Length: 344
Length: 271
Image (cartoon, rainbow over all chains, first blue to last red; front, top):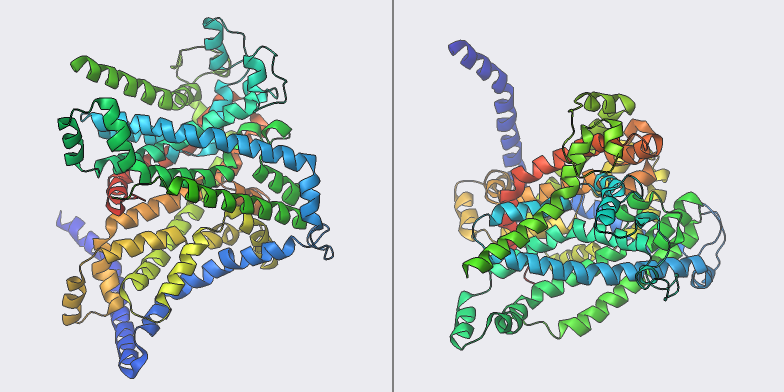
């Protein structure tokens, strides 16, 4: 035992030395900063020291690219070797049928995923809030899809929705429905549901709906956690007072819980829309780099134009258009939804 | 009332089962024979557990190398994000200097710059620096996160000022206070920042896809996509690879979730 202790001490000795030396260095730095402060420089030297790495990296990889991207979008050609073409990239994008198609796909996706994820997460969080036993465990289980890699999970979903080998079609055949092509189906879901009454190219395709389903599954854990945090800070007295006044469960929900939770709903829908416009992993991994126009969203389109074909300027122009749409929609949401938010 | 409660539990458990079903199926299929995995059935468990699938997966593609790369990249990103956001968060919360508000708003504003606007110029920048297909390209652009800086600033603002005053009396300056007293006190927020940084880097796909060219610095996500195109027909091995890739994140999440919950509650993302 003493032998072991001795070895441990020898092993730990360098680390202790290092810690002491580090502390001394910090102390000397502190003394230096203190001397500078006494010369009337205030906290500036310390702030410079602490902020320098963050500011350099942020301006290099986040602020500079914003300007650079805008500049690139005015140049034609491939691999950044073209001439100045003004707004030609933008007009070309707006007239390009592929761009319009992928814009429509993105729009369907956002309109489908965000409201469904928010409402589903609210229902589950509300249920979890009502129970006491096992709440922590169930919340962790619901959160699990969110921390897992979208690529690995997409591989599983592809197998579950496989037309021949998948479990989903097996269940469908048990229930007496005809098997579907799921992710590989380019026809619209409305077309399939109406038995061909509605034309096949109207509305989102069945493949796109599967991608939406995947992202609802993958993203709801985060929203459930945020909703639970929001629910737990609602003051109990208000609910009790409403109950005293004879409000039923439904009226309590509509007139007390939901208004008090509106800041959370507002936050989640704004973040949700921004994230949904930028979805890439699920689209890429579920369709393997797409190819099918009915499941190609704008980010995949930018990726293909930029990386596979080398149209840097055109890709940057499409990205800029996408960002403009996101900003416009966020502002619109802010105006329309923001007015209904109740801040206590 | 009791019946209602039972119904609620039933509903929540069904939901949890649906949320977990893909994972259960994946784990089962990882240890099935190829034939068993590719025939559709509701049996989650394999008839005979094929433990050899694990070694076979590592033989079929260089997953060992991919894992080394992924952990190296995600670990470095995690440590650097922690360091930069601790430092910047402390400066914004505790130091008095001119232009603090302005700088803070610029950093918050950079949070709104979406990834699609930055990845094309960033790729060009990385190639000009000669970092294409290297670890630096995967690590350096992600070493700062504006959101983490914001979180750490909130954590430091929540500390009582008296702690600092007492430390100064004992001869501490800002740096020593930050390292010896600040860090232990903001641990819950720091763990959350570390968790998100690690997961974000480990699960990233688009950026590694753009800046890597061959196996030498490919991460697991890219490796899995490549494995799918090479060996898509070997479903059991594909599922085994997916399980192995998901496993570390799940373990890390379960270890760190105590802190994570505390922070979501504490910062109160209330709007």
